[in-house]
Length: 123
Image (cartoon, rainbow, N blue to C red; front, side):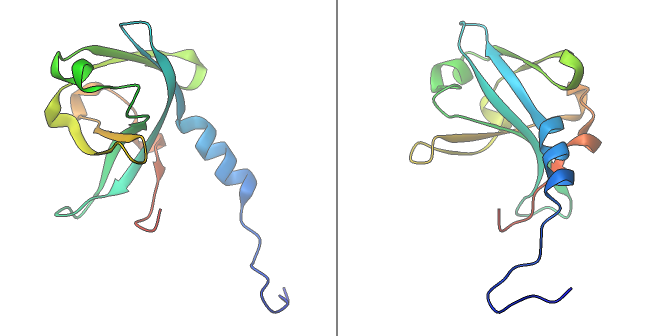
């Protein structure tokens, strides 16, 4: 393939789109709030492996929900329902400015982390 000056090679959009679709989820908090969640594996400081996480809006999982250890429910591929309990030790990152919170997925959450999209550090 010959690329013109300033032209980027095509990305595998279809493959990436299918992977992203598998990692998107509807998330429901037991206070009636709901939104979108994204499951992925990210590089994390002080670790040699990728950390499985749930990323969603910070305003969805507010401090009160986390402090009280509320249960969040979410659906993944084929509508299967999962539940995890929130707590402060699961939070790996949050930002009010960017309205994002990243919550670690633990081994005992019984999720197939092999299906999570792998994100590189530039993301």
